[in-house]
Length: 449
Image (cartoon, rainbow, N blue to C red):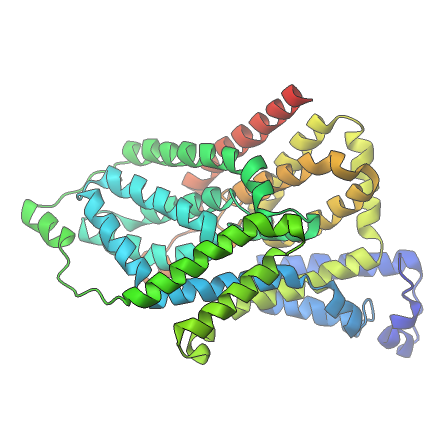
């Protein structure tokens, strides 16, 4: 634990001199209050909540501004910022509009095809572009397609959310929890492809299959429209505006970025630095106005991460994670299979109800402490955390960022999504996929062991 007494300037000015136990308690209190404000996003925006927590940490002297700055994981922020810029250029080129138009044609107006094609398309994009960015452009398209075909958009929007979270589980860049784990644990793109992707791909098909069964049972896969209406829906006369040269440049840079993700980690290149560099190069050759592109960056998400890193940094500075890691070590012992199940299922349960990003930031810090004791032997716990946190995000409407983003889009489009509307589909899908992925991973690990 670091020396903290000198940092308590405000508390000292108020005549308060706290001992180590009191400092730990204060750090925990601020963390829980920040969590509570995040859960009350209906009243306080989650980014404001995280920044308030970070300000309180510095004002009360738990961290100095310099220490707070050092607590921020810039590899994570660079990775998010870089991928956002690449996606923004792709969007500007008309790439996503083109893909959506082609996907609509492939559905042939059949509700079952709409469900499967758009779900699998969402899962695929989510694995390589990050799921929050994917649902931002996919959700409005699904609303338009469903409405044109005389379908209720809500179940299809839920399917997009579930697919984005299962598909995003597969790679380092697919879901924010994986970005955090990769940075904290020092894991590369290939590590996730090898250890997590097979289970994520399997449960993606399970998730869409279960959605198919539930939607067929409640009549959501039945459409009522005439042949003329179907033809009008499938042949959109609206001209498609694309920039083929810009699209080609963006796709080449995107491909190079993925290649560098795979080969960069072994030679010491962090994913965040790669994404920042390649996206900056794309801005150079795209010849677009950077100010216009930067306006489309999700700054609220980046600031949300910054605030949370500071709040969690106060817990680490106070030695909380060391104590939790010791307790986890005693609970797991030498039985790593038990640890996989314990970390995986508990991560899914907690992530489903408190948002998987702040949970993963704090849990990753615990496992980092544990890594100091167990070394590479505890690697399976990182993958259990990834599977649990990402798949558990499907439990409730507040379980993951993608859920909240689609909910906002649905409300804006005139199809409000309630907590129970989502949970009716999300809870069974999350339960089945998490039990399957974590259980299968523990089984495979036991065979290898």
